[in-house]
Amino acid sequence: MVKLAVLNNSREILNKNILFLVISCCAILNAQQADVNREITFPDLDHHLTLVCDFHTHSVFSDGSVWPDIRVEEAEKDNIDVLAVTEHLEYQPHISDIPHPDRNRSYQLATKYSNSDLLIVSGAEITRRMPLGHANAIFLKDANKLHSADEIAGIVPKDDMRPFEAANKQKAFVFWNHPTWRQEQYGDVVITEMHKTLFSKGYLHGVEVVNEFEYSEESLQIALDYDLTIIGNSDIHGLVDWDYEISEGGHRPVTLVFAKEKSEKAIKKALFKKQTVVWNRNTLIGREKWLLPLIDASLEVVSVEYKRDAAHVSIKNKSDVRFILKNNSSFNFFINSDLVEIPAQDTIKLTVLTKGVLESFSLEFEVQNAIFAPRKHPIITLKVQ
Image (tube, rainbow, N blue to C red; front, side, top):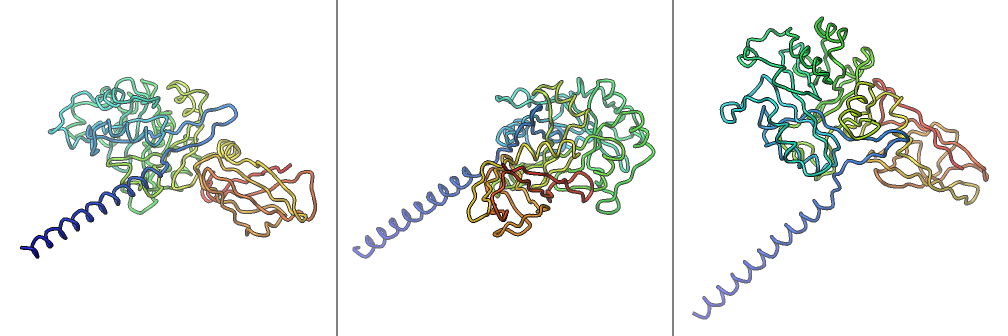
């Protein structure tokens, strides 16, 4: 009996220790997750707000896996300024389980669930077979007017332009989604005669150069060739946290829109004027006209101190980009090579071999993780005084 009592007591102690370890591990894991700053932050420009936008997401009201409130909560955690829940108009795999004759329903619910300053805009995805593919229309007044009963039945001709005409009648902003999707080869983009017609009629206003995990040089070139707005979105169907590994420091791709104010009217105007930069996998993609002001607003020389005829220059990064800079100036950096990294939301110190005290000088860099055309990187100048 004594041995049995001792054994039971040992088991009880062991169980308590195991429970303590489990609780401790959970506490550590929760603390680590809490330490991950997932908010997407970029500085405003001198005369424009920098608004973080995701214009392509899905819920169970088309082929997504979550209710619209999850899309809203994720966006709020990521500090998204503008969100569009863009359901497929025609492709409705959950329609027998979640019948909804109103194609505006996910937008209505998302608006209802938002309790912050997150701006939710109405949208829908026009679904056509390749090579035309898919397009998103945002700032819609009524998504129901973009489709009909024969479209639901799947008998729509692939060259049907009715939804594009209907979207433009509502003065929506329409962009071509993932042009490389289901093409014969990775990166292959086919521009059909219908695409050219849509471009010429002004029915397509932008193109996704980034969709989900893919960046397309060909799509970027199309944006430049046809004067389209450069767009990048998550196209999230599951959970943002899982798909983009938020706990590991990842982020969803977003479109940065430079608008005069945070309103539907101002954002829509900025999109039509092509005032965008895409942020994807620590890379900025956009026209130089907007890339350069964004980089200039992000990087600041905050101090300079001379020691032994060398300038010790502190450079602050006020954005979420980990900038990768290649030295194009005539100065050597003594400690650093010609490649310099400035972590997101951090400050570094460069030792610049000036060989004497200078009243002022300039550092010129090529920004390796910024792109204004396929494989072309902008040049910036940081003035040191």
